[in-house]
Length: 532
Image 1: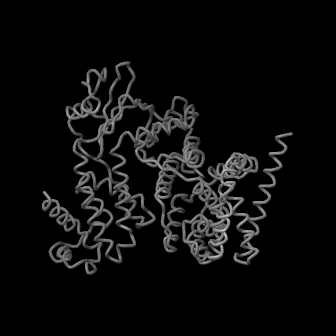
Image 2: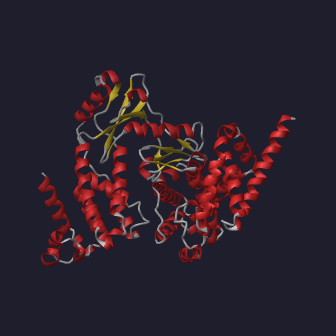
């Protein structure tokens, strides 16, 4: 089986003439035999991206899934390849219904007739990892049963081993190493292994449902935990119109403008309010409840892939997007350094010029025609030249934003994503950095002051040493990192004061000292007024 698989991969490379996409002269000597195709096979007439997609389809479900993941990494690959790989579909034949019954009975420890009033052995849908069957619970509730394919773990482990081996080979080729093959395969490995655990998906679904309970924007089906297992997930069956059935939605009198705008609002609510977002929002996972066509509500399913955002990333993302909207490229460059997304010694003005060169041609177009997601992709591509390590949550965010944009403009071509998103982000930032919230957060941390007080002299001494050794570009980030709690703020202010006195830091940091003193003074005033 081992040699059969390696023979098949080699044959498919030749069959689809992938040798024309790779500089074989830079390959190790023992792989250069693949270039033999150039002598015995005709020159391909099919474009390279199409041949790569056909190659993944021929290798089966796991490679198809890998190709789908590759299509989301537009920060690494040319857009024509990403567009073509996005067309990969899980056209996988379903496994037999009697096997599905055995998996359910084994996982839930009972006969199918005792678990369900009805269980349809014909699946509703079949994909590379799992398939879904309609069912009715004993109490009459309509449900769907998602079942992991039998023996898929073994297949995935073997194919992952091949992918890792190929990635390591490509990492040794200068032309291919910039695509970070090892990193991409590792990300895929984590993603696909997570999708094999349906308990994780059930937990994600429940979290998203709780975040939008009683919401007019989004409905998420209920998970029936008593019937769920690592390889079996039972949940409420939903009824709605698929988001890509635009003609059906229009025929029902759906307010398409509102539907498109609500999709944007849902996305930014998940990212900025909840720090938890559905990261697989392709049309197959999105439905619409048109019970009231004038106020359509989204229905989201399949929460196997979700993203989370730390508070710091939320803040810098919002500030970046607003700076982009205002074409303040210096602010964008500075924020990237302060957030740690690019190294602290990055030359701000060079980075600013690179960002301007990419963004100005985009902003020459009308705002409603600008793609928010593609703008982020271009930014990531520029930032990589300055050694930016794109974090997984930002990749998921970029992918999700592209999906939301695509869906929104499919529904309502005149959707102005900027105009829809900007008020929401401005309100979020105002609520986040308002004085009332700041004082409230600081006041909550007062009990920890006395507990940590004995350690302050040591920490202040370490702060002075840190600031003294750091270059000016890194000093602001050190101050921000250490000022996230009230004790940290006070110790940082003391350290900055001593460092400034010793002439060990740039005097621009006096601004931070003044701001911190004002906050502490306001907090003390607030506390006293509360006692009176």
